[in-house]
Image (cartoon, rainbow, N blue to C red):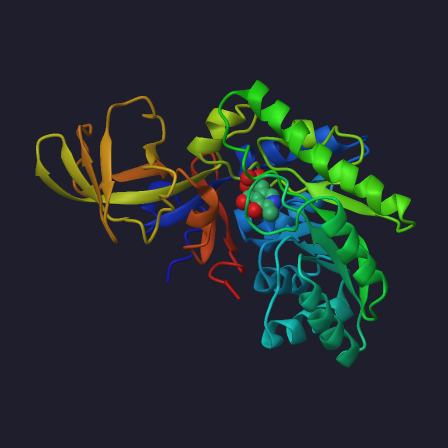
Length: 362
Ligand SMILES: Cc1ncc(COP(=O)(O)O)c(C=O)c1O
């Protein structure tokens, strides 16, 4: 198989996931600058790109205290790459996983979210069997309506339970304001972020008043970091998409550049202004909308995706075989579909990075 290092990106076999190195590095620098010299620190979310090379660069960029993961399998990939201090900002449930969780806690600083008393006991049993200690963040629901207990008393009860349980350590609160991150109006986004995080701050104070130290309150995203990261009482911001970006996030946070794209090729021209590309929703995260064409974002092209095809109407004079760069609507689900990313500078491939966390759903 050709290595493609040094090749112009148009010569890559398609579909291929591309990462513009300059744009990505500028994104990392911009976010690192925001967090350097700030009380709150960054904990970049691995679920965005699932690539350990990129995670390492995020740590090196500064302002970061560790990595956030959504899945245990992602956390194992991050630890295997030698990156320590991992938060799984999600529930890890089931005996097979808890055994792995405890093993992982033996070799790295590991924290995981919990919102259930029996689950605390299950993690404790697995940790004690492995002679490990697992750090726990009590997850509170600050408005998203996903996981998490109600802020206040229920969270305090879980914190007390953890304090009385061996093999686990109460480290703080997981509080993600996922219900506000896609608000287009930045003022509304700020206002609702502050309201949501206020619930976490009050819960923190309640737990501290009960004599239990709260080391970490973690929340935030790529479109709310500038608010979450300045709230007194928030320690960590788990932003992910800022590294690669996609066109949906670009509308929310214009300060970051779109570094990610999918290179596709025209495989058919069934009629005038009608073209079919060789990538469908098995190669493009599409749940937030159709892709856009890089450099033609304002064009009135209408796409429709099927499994392996992207059918475009109103397209320019693309010939069969032409390479087209598409910007996905959702970077995170797109990266999860590829095994490697082609990193390019000035239109040429400079590196190929494995995406170790791709498909690691367990
Ligand atoms: C738990 C959690 N934290 C943080 C984020 C923020 O990620 P992003 O910056 O990509 O929106 C997400 C997004 O899904 C999430 O689920």
